[in-house]
Length: 247
Ligand code: IPE
Ligand code: IPE
Ligand code: MG
Image (cartoon, rainbow, N blue to C red; front, side, top):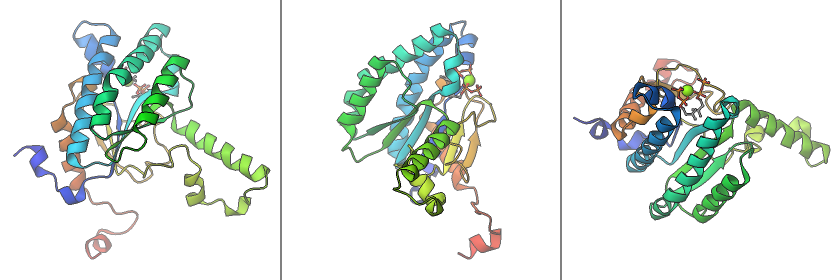
């Protein structure tokens, strides 16, 4: 049986977040430069976006560029920025056709021409009701939390908010990523076992799934396999197994 056939449609995670890792190592294995790995990584993005829609996932968040990635060699950074720009332009028609809503999550520190292309993609797809594809770009979890604190402090300083009212729910509502639910499942490829400053607040109770597969090799079946694995987990949220089973 394929992994796709093993998925229980009633328990598909509504939000899957992916740390797409291993492009550089994939390229090196082929004797190519790192950027070739990023180019093939785009193929995986296409496959996984389509697979997520087929599985009935509502939100797919892809970590495409972290705030720390700005420290990479300038040539790789500029190569990635142009790849992102050309990809969003070449994919937009397909995304519209598939009723996908594009959202960008990040500190906005991007080249002006790329920012314009991304804003156009968000705008053209804003009323779409299918999958929400969130691209985390120049994103970091600590940036998002600090930005939220800044927004709340700003509101309080203006007299619009009583600091005593600040609790987890209110905090979450001020977050740049407040439009999406917390991911039930977080996937990281390439055999690295860390969060690398991704969705720090939102992954408090996410199930983590790690695979040795390098991102450019990641197939639809790899996504389905992660979903099946997730469906075999028992999510206890601090309770006992017995409490969960009698619920
Ligand atoms: C992930 O692949 C893509 C980005 C971080 C942009 P890497 O470029 O990190 O690939 P490795 O980890 O060096 O193999
Ligand atoms: C995390 O991957 C960021 C993205 C996938 C965009 P990295 O490859 O940059 O992470 P570290 O530096 O190895 O932790
Ligand atoms: Mg990496």
